[in-house]
Length: 393
Image 1 (cartoon, rainbow, N blue to C red):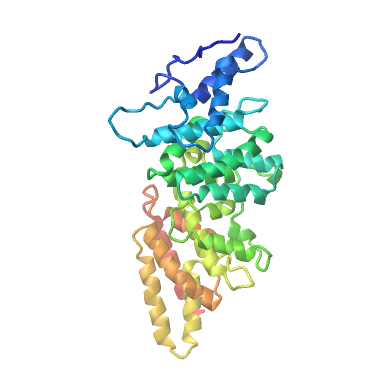
Image 2 (image 1 turned 90 degrees about the vertical axis):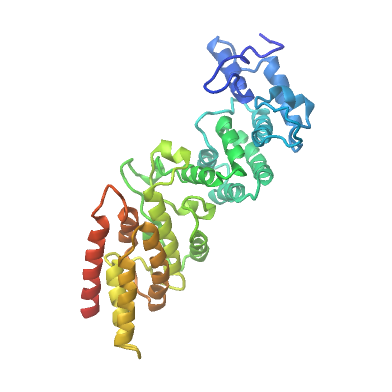
């Protein structure tokens, strides 16, 4: 059955009076299947899909054939500037048109974010892992919405060829947020989806309750990629966890799907991010791994002080290090602890003293957790004891 108007255009949804066009297209396709007919689009949808492709590369609001498929209203307030959400919808419509064109299945797939789609593309082996990551990172580092859309336009044909869909309603929200101050949440959701910390890869032989081995444990000094990997991790120093695309391949923290898709910033993710950046700074220039199990910050500081005592400054150097370590122990929260560690780790690097990054991540995660009010006190006492043992041994 063909129609000249959409049979679904007045279907109400939460918070909206009409479906977005890609949602109408999905309902149209699924209705045909539910009625026992071969899944295909009505003439209304097919005609408008052609119109969407006419808008590719053109400025929002300048394509007459697209006006009827917009659902974001324009306010008649005399302003020449289009609303950000209207511009984002224009881009979303054109991307959907490109994606759906000649596809054998429906491409609007609720729940499939851009990071998830790239993960599926990587697992499809249509492209190498490096090629997929290069394209995703290029999109994630776009300076503005226009550049971002250009990168997604290059991804969409690859997704179509691999039979991978995308949640276009979610993409609209993300495009709207890109230049509106909430870009970091978008970036974090893409990174978490791509690294898929909530779902183990069967190829890894992991069960759902296992934590993946942290990067600092598996790092191989002297490997061909070691320098580039450490540089990527150092680029995250001082930046918001989960938002640095170059770091995404090195995250191992698992997260519930709901939090992952929302781009939530959890204590686990923040602690791993800080530990990764510190390890990268610590490891550079060394041909042996600087992650040393059992070396707490107290032990490492004590070993450093003992080395300093053997130098020309002797006891004065030891006393200075002890004061510096004492300031670290007084950290009021995880952010202050991270700040002191960032100035402490270069000293360990210079002296070639290792540090237990598993323990460090645990401390960063729990230091100011209100559910563990005694955690910081426990770390302070243990590290202080470790310091004096290492100095005197």
